[in-house]
Amino acid sequence: MDSGELVDSLRRRALSMLRSARLRIEWGDYDLACFDAEQAVQLRLKASLLRLFGEATRVHGVLEHLSLLRRRLAEAGFKTAADSLSDLVRAERELVELLDESYIMARYGSPGMYRKIDAERAVEFAERLLKALEKLEEAMLR
Image (cartoon, rainbow, N blue to C red; front, side, top):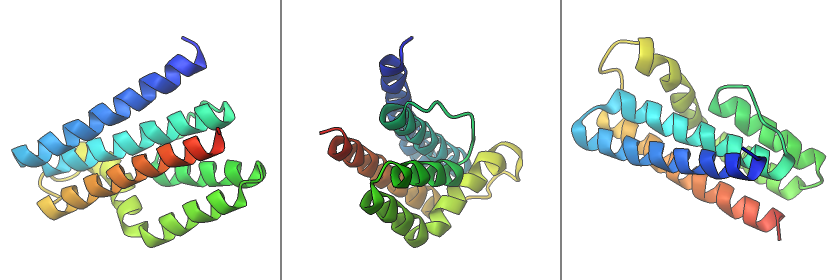
């Protein structure tokens, strides 16, 4: 599989995980809805890093991927985009932490740790972030 195919595959999987997260909210499965939202974001960040910088990451975690993307943007001279990403992380720090935490807690934590509102906020943030990454890529690859 070449890198273009891998990027497409990661993007499709991210959207699939986001659909799964929405369904899990409907089913009342809030812990796994948060986990699926985290996976959607993580996969989409991996796709962006690969598409924009040719970097296939082995790291895990939303914050770690966001930090890596911000660094790569700054190194490539896209200071405005890097600053915008930093601002997003600062403004949504609580949700970034919720997503990162859900990676572990949905698997090993106490069932029922997350409430409906947590899952809804996680999915809404994931949707916004996926759209922002798409716009970022479009702007950079023009």
